[in-house]
Image (cartoon, rainbow, N blue to C red; front, side, top):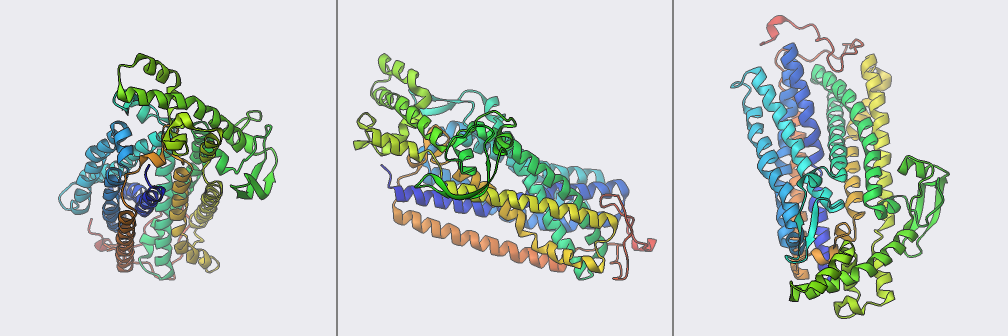
Length: 542
């Protein structure tokens, strides 16, 4: 059996690289569409200021995109180097969406991004706008295929285990793509990226306004960001509820952990606002509850019972016992694939094969036929992920989401009423740059909820994590972990340096001189399309 420390180090390495990479992804997803929206206004109105906005935010997008690609490429290699059994076991399914992502989405955005940056003088307005939209669509398609692959790990659909080849094989490509988990997660993640971009654009714009620099570009950018932020934040909260509803069916153990629900209670169950879960004692040391709220929140009914940890563990015990004959039959089939009795036994118990694998690590000599009731109970206890980690990361994510909704609603009210730059509201402008890290933290928390909550599985209900890793040495794993963290930290430092440098340099303005500090903007309901300040016609190049 693979050293458990190697498995843990493999998980830490992948988690570290994924968390670093996920710092770049949301901004790319969101700002690409904001840039497309700015350019659309430029093409339809002909106002040069929107081209200046498009080019400036496009420069920041390019910096983020380049470093995001650099951090993302290594992750796909990690599947082969550190998760070799996983790659062999489900590679036929997991590799398909990743291959499509590389061949279609990544090449699409990589090809057109060059035309977007360098094509301003070589393409017509319409052609350039089309290229910008293709970059935005390519970025989001890339997220779609990656989340389809991840969705298979969360809720394996469209595949079946073949006892002859000893691997999972794809049986229904449509079911894989249109998995409810994958689609809900794609929409939720993409819109979270739009929120991230809106907070970023608003924060940088507010920074300019505080310094009386690039005022017209900053005002229009802030207004677009505020309205974009209201819509996308409301969307991400709504779709987060949909994702939770879908996840409740696919992974009830994750749901029980998110709500620190140790015992199954009669519907409608109370909702834990805050709690201090104890994994060893399987109870909440203390909690603050709101009665009758959890059941309608999770099931959208008042009568459907939400299973707690106690019920889920009891169910896991039964599934492990049912999966043990499947593992035994698989062992016989590995010696003689034509063993009809073994095949019949396998077919009768195959739905719980993964649960049978769970007890292998505790059974004497890894022989499941020797597993005792105590071994089965330990394996069943493993099916409950770390409740404290999931409970609190989930609440941090939700809390930050609500904070951003309030922030954007107030921002929209101020910018539409023309009071954003009033002296009494300078505190809000000062707050905006400090809000920039908030959506990044929320996205990281969401990723942790999804991935920690899937444990102890790499493919939920099918393949345990401890079976999936490669048999490296501990020294190799520590060396590579330190190497990746160091390298990715350098990437983050480079990103911060280039971003700050570009922001300090500011946008190039062609015919839209900064409005004097005494200028008072007029109320507008144009969604960022406020009238241009009076500027001499000669100042406009187009």
